[in-house]
Length: 231
Ligand SMILES: Nc1ncnc2c1ncn2[C@@H]1O[C@H](COP(=O)(O)OP(=O)(O)OP(=O)(O)O)[C@@H](O)[C@H]1O
Image (cartoon, rainbow, N blue to C red; front, side, top):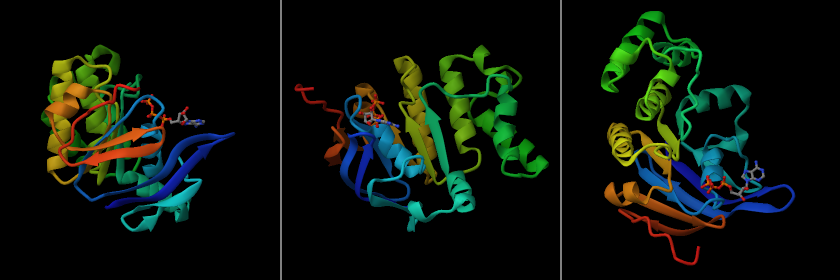
């Protein structure tokens, strides 16, 4: 599903302009880093795509559908197409690794035998098989993020949004997470990754959209991190 953001302004009350006239197209299968200082609008831009944020002006089209026009039922179906990963993992603490994965499939009415098959497959792929009966707090940061990515992708979303996915991880673990995100992208999933991690952006070169004060100041294929000195 192509993401098209057209002339979007987002104002939060009373007068915070989080996004100012944003226009971008992200084709299906793209890999995009969103970079920029704190408060530049990265998270708000991602929340446009999940429709947690509705534009003050302009529109957001995903797969040709204007998100503003989605009713409750269609929105719920639409959101199945979007996986989300956060810096703080947001796993369910009272469920095991295995249950964190089955839970999201049960929620969309997946048949039990398929749930079991897909859960085992992804546990294996993410190197979490031996951890399957542990609880999130018993995992390392990298393992928790692998589990969060597994959970976000197990229902095969078209788009994966990752907000600072390597923020709490050391460099080696961050690299490992990036390789997983790139392998997911290689299967055709669109990736949008907001990050402050210069090393990762410069090491795994992809499209870089740079925001400053709610505006896009740069949009480059195989871009670099490059934060100006005046910020
Ligand atoms: N729900 C909200 N209500 C009011 N203001 C908000 C809301 N969400 C975001 N903002 C403001 O919008 C601006 C952009 O915030 P946003 O979280 O998108 O920035 P960011 O680039 O993701 O920052 P960070 O790198 O710290 O995550 C900030 O000034 C923020 O305070």
